Length: 314
Ligand code: PEP
Ligand code: MG
Image (tube, rainbow, N blue to C red):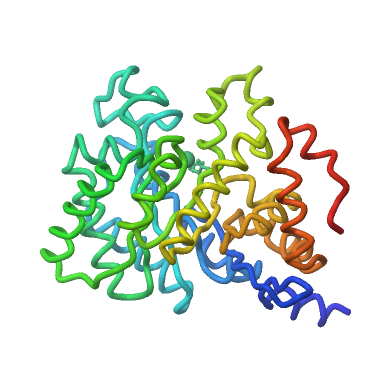
């Protein structure tokens, strides 16, 4: 039985009818890439690069970042790695950047907005990423994209940097975590290679609930149909253009959430490595038609509590 559990761990998540969902890990540090493999991840769906920038006096150098990203992708031994450019701001302040409290609000100079306002930081990071991409299959992901213009601006910077370091052409994707990006999903899907849905921020911005507020955070339930309907819209828009959709927010790590997301048609679920075995096990119990029916019912509700009360698919 132990052997069976072991082989299950390293097998893909196939529904009972054979439909496959890619299950990958969220990581921040090199050691976590190794842990992801041990947990049965089929790759990395989100590298949060913030940790390199936090709790220090200066921004990390290009070489420091290059060594880190290279070590991560090498640790994955050929499996894909989606690396997100730095998402500073909001609840992740950084003293050496000299940002005001206003800049650092959740509606302020966060994610790609900081990158576009302070190109020095993002260019250094992009140089490191394109150099590391010579050592393994890296895809680039940009946080807090609200409009196609945000993406076009960062894509132009990325392409200039790529040529400077003679880096490979790699897939470029956007986080879908701002409601504006859902509204613009048909247009975004035409210009990007993939979507990665950030349910933590999509919940915060969709329900207008600060995700760090001690009283309100409880109400920021990502199973709310407000959030599920936005994911459904974005997924349909991506698929209409032949692009794939991942979910890297907390909802992907919730067994019921993972089932509903699969029913919506999401292609990849990315989560903390420790939760991978349980999510795979849950997915293997149902078939796609059951999960599609579950998703349909969930989307038709008007509250997260009602979604949780739907009889389970399995
Ligand atoms: C999200 O918003 O869901 C997400 C994955 O990004 P972060 O939690 O790092 O903001
Ligand atoms: Mg986010």
